[in-house]
Amino acid sequence: MKTTPVTKDDLTRSVLAVPPLARSADFSPDTVQNRAIVRHLEAGGVTTLLYGGNANFYNIGSGDYASLLDMLEGVAAPDTWLIPSIGPSFGLAMDQARWLRGRDFPTAMVLPMNGQATPAGVETGLARIAEAFGRPVILYLRAENYLEPAALARLVQAGMVTAVKYAVERPDPLPDAYLAALCEAAGSDTMVSGMGELPALAHLRDAGLTAFTSGSVCVAPNLSMATLAACRGGDFTKAARLRALFLPLEELRNALNPIRVLHEAVRLAGIAETGPLLPMLSNIETAHHQAIGAAARELLAADRALALAA
Ligand SMILES: N[C@@H](CC=O)C(=O)O
Image (tube, rainbow, N blue to C red; front, side, top):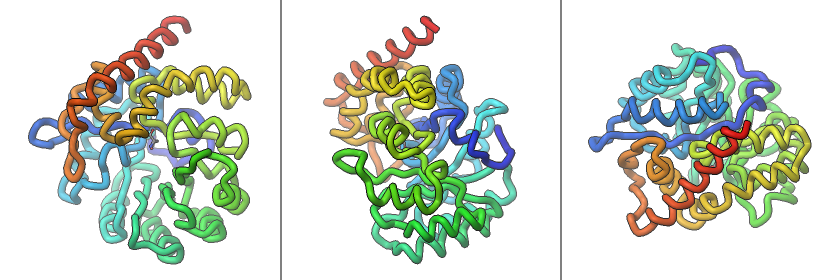
């Protein structure tokens, strides 16, 4: 596992994969199946694994946190960058940050707190969490005005925030005045497009962002990495052609539930037995399995065709 401090190159080198977490029937993390997911990603060239929403880190208890991260560390390749999430509540994030201080993870992502948060409180909270951790954190920003642009600039300047996973959903990704203000204040190279392949092209082409996160990369790592390479090479026609291959699965994810659909898609594509989703989530209803399986297998087939052609 990469243990050196985060650089801008680290953010752009790889799609930031946001994998599901495989569990056994008793909800314990399944080492063999998580290794299969990680190997599938690494074989497709992915070097950054961000365990957050798709792994249902929102619902992980403090008592299970250490053994879960030990397991993930054990399955990741030596040069893979593993980013655990902390929070979403301030108290839980502080407990996890104090514990992470004694470990080698270069950063951690602070999950968004819904409802019980104010912009000023978020600024104070991020500063305290980064101080307790002793390292800068990644902010997962999902709501308009969650943090003031000037506050983000202060936190970046102070070395407390290293990047932002920007995931404020809009009918069209751009124009986005809030994203523009955050980029203006803190630099667009701090902002990572955080909603998968669909909005990533507009964010990378027109808003100056340089990296994106993805869940469907866990089915099609070669295609997602090729999309990133095409964007970074300025070939947005090619990037759009590659992105189109993700549409059937992404549309199902958006229509039903992104986390629940991805969890089942990885299983139905034959990549790993993902098992049960940890409460408070639950697995998607079997009525949707046929459509999810078909979209996932089609995407995986396209991924394999690309890998063979390379
Ligand atoms: N939510 C997006 C990006 C990851 O956070 C996805 O799952 O594709």
